[in-house]
Length: 253
Figure 1 (cartoon, one colour):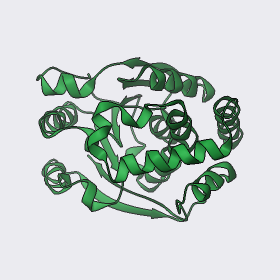
Figure 2: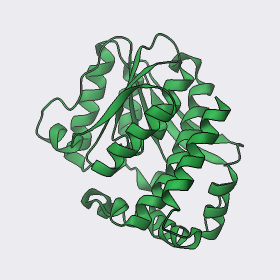
Figure 3: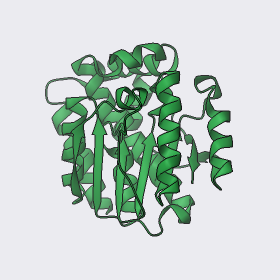
Figure 4: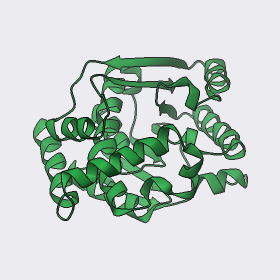
């Protein structure tokens, strides 16, 4: 599997540095990280993927970061690996977090959903790279949830993932998504939510923690001493980031 991961990372680097320099990607990464930390209201308008440089930065840095964080979370929770037949990845981005859960739980099938055509293409490429049976499709989950429609379907044996998605939703869509995730859990699915560890970016976390606790779930904060690969370390240093440890918090039920 390490060879597959190395090949996936090399392909990302080959494609996204084909017509951009590492310095250009690092500048875009600085802007992208600012968008996530300081100007989250712009995420709903698609600001995070609004330029070629930001898309490259997301694919080369945040995608692998989400992969390694989710891989460590799944490894640390054996209950997240048991009894699954497929993964549904909501707001899949480049597919990295969903791939990490799928390979960690030895699940061959995966379906990703994202409103970005670029992200859908990246996720589908990632599924092929890891020899998973699945594809990503365009779907505006927030709009569907906000209108009270069912944004996804899941039942027993499905792992439903919402990684780095929930904090990007407005209050109405977030509440609707919580109801959808709890419904999926009641139908026999397992649900995993992953978000950054910074509390100031998620004032809704306490409500969700209580909701997951009521259905027997757990809430965790994670700090993993796992180094990123060299390319991601260099990008982080050039962008003024400090990923000496991988951090996240999660909800699982």
